[in-house]
Length: 225
Image 1: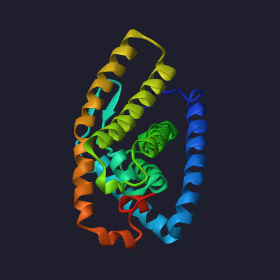
Image 2: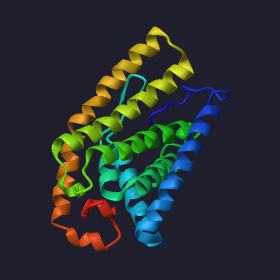
Image 3: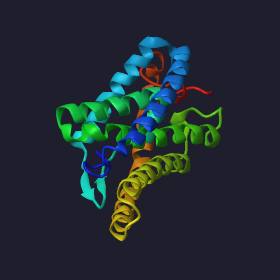
Image 4: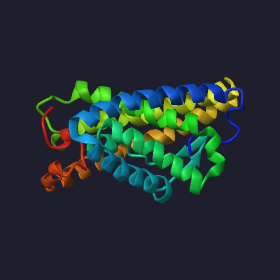
């Protein structure tokens, strides 16, 4: 996915296992909160919907090699706004795993680094949303500027983690630096698209307020905090 084979040698992969374990532990913490909010059935349903979406994003949406890695349309902030932090985090991890098992087994050794790269920015988006979005505002009513801020935080976080793994694995060489900047510049172009996707999905959700009782969305999608 993002961390290409060979970027980290086996000795340096140990750090990726540690960061992935930390991300998993924090996801469990978020999951406990989600369980209290809407119960196990809703949590599992949202994870299932999200994992299917993530797998589709990875396999069907355009993705291309740029610099040190690949550019993907992950729509992490969209998943967060629809499903909540915990279901979105588990969905990203499961979607990435399914892609590795069925289509890209050569990516599995880098799973720890890749899952860290996807989840830690999602946690940052969750924290940012708590600061930016008023508790009186359901997510379906957020403004473009807030969607842009959340998308920028997610995509920027992904770029920073890819850069970290690249420099950690290959050192601060001119070639690595050029490749990282090339990748980062291309990836931030996603920021131009994702806020529009967020608002389009949220606009569609407004006409489906019955979903608030289905357990398939985060309570904040249609309700105040």
